Image (cartoon, rainbow, N blue to C red):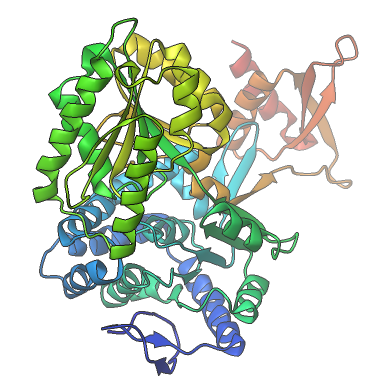
Length: 528
């Protein structure tokens, strides 16, 4: 299968297994970039509403089990990624289900004030009009740790009328390529503005060629990879980084039951703890009691065992060895480790029953990073202790899943938001963020656009003679301007300052002398 998509033919080279990859030169990327920029001109002729409807139609096709691109993806993904087919199926369903035209347009309305701002200059206040412009070309660099990373980024770029060149992960070029191929079948106007071209990360010449042609670079990866890319970015190119992040769960003793354990097990099992929204640790707040964390760890272990049938793992041999090392290290540090012989899941419990508490726990659980379907259970006495543990890690904190009453959740949101978290949600929802989520604290659509303000000021003409009819506050000035526009009376709009109170702006409106009488009637109307 061809695991790329480009607006020009590329020679295929031997790939891995059932996929073939392209042979690409810097000159090829220059031609691709030029083609994408031309496609961007055609993309800008469409309204955002039309683009959203086309994306909606494509997303609905991906919900059909007989879609060829979906069938091939589900066949190939488990061979290239450490995820089973049921895990991949759930991931694809979660990717496309929220991509409806209404939801996408509402999202743009929320972020930009009015989705039509990407089509035309729209009215703001005080005679101001604004329009949002997407970048001429974006370069999306993906990592391959979870299924479907980058699909929403492609969608958001298209909504902003921004063509996108995608470099998928060498581990997973499949889903981005197949998504682009489905665009070609069902929405060719959009497909022409997308290219998915895998190449080796060591090919500095290809990176340099792509970066030189783009206005925006969006990079996923670990901190080392992202920083290496960042050093290549010229000052004139906007850089949006998606570096290392981790997530946690917080459960109070009143909610440490089987239902919460099932929901947390789902969060753990969806991507086997490989994504930025995977809960690496669950804090159980015992409030002075003892044993709640241990009991909850047992319930979680039972839930993970049940999910092993519904969402089986697909561990490679090297990962199994890593999990074994993880378990041995935790046991050496004094934790209780629960895990089946096949290492399909691991629960590590740090509590008083096993000689670790507070500062000892903090010193120990952070030493051992979670890997495939493994999680730390850390018991604490209070929410303040949770904050104490998380505060030094705040800049890496992405999501927080909670199981507690509303009053405590309010306390959590304020605290972790201040630390750096960009999402707080119920346990069980951590791995399926809404499209409205502001990843890393800011939504990509907001990052992709720039604004142009149009101040519609008619300058006084020397041969007509203009007269001042109004000098006052902004609110009355705005009302008068609307009245003048309603009657078709030309006007000029200027800003002055009150000599008595220099901090108070005044609006000065002038009209042609021959329209003064009509304009004064408008002034009288707003003064009533």
